[in-house]
Every structure is written in C-alpha cells, then in structure tokens.
Image 1 (spheres, rainbow, N blue to C red):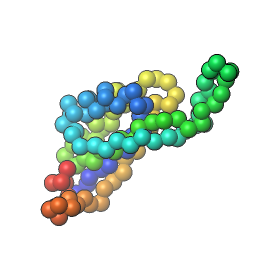
Image 2: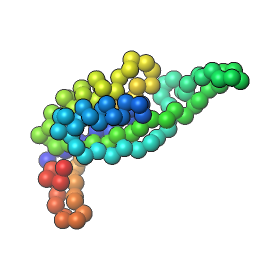
Image 3: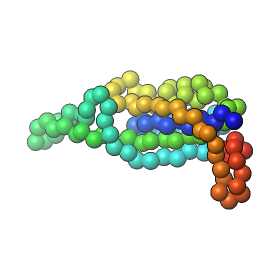
Length: 115
C-alpha cells in the first residue's frame, strides 16, 4: 500500500479550473481550505488611494487529495501545474506526502479501497 497525499496551495481564482481538470482525470475526492501565508516574496506591495501598502499574509486555497498507487502521480501533478499556473510570483506550491494507512470510520475499511 503506497498511497500519497497531495497538498497544494493555489490562487483562489484557479480553484474551479484545477478542480474541473482533476475531475476529468478521475480525481473526485478532495478537501479545500482557505489559508493565508507568504513565501519568499514576504507579502505583496499594493497601491491604493492612500498610497502604497504591503499585504503580508496573502490568501490562498489549500487543496488536499489522497490517491492510490494505481493513479499516475506525475500526471496529476502536471494537471495541477498546468491549470494553476499564471507565471507570476505567488502561483503556489505542491507537496507530496506518503500515507501510511487510511481508515473509513463508518465501516472500518482500511487502505486504498476507501479512496
């Protein structure tokens, strides 16, 4: 059993495009969270009526997807990148995490069958 969890941080405006592309690849289950953070750019410089100001904590969406080893991980990663990329700083990041086991609470099923 070699399941993986994909955690990706994407721009909120890219959610529907990424979600639709993942559905087309057979990925149906995912969790979405609203998060705030910053990377190397340490925030964003914006200009408003009162002048320039820095927004340190930038809103993103965190998407979590669990996949079995039967799913082509590289293909799923490519789909996320192709559909989330704008080419500008702040497009996000993807993390791949091994899943040791998974259990469906209702039935006590274990492993890849619950995905």
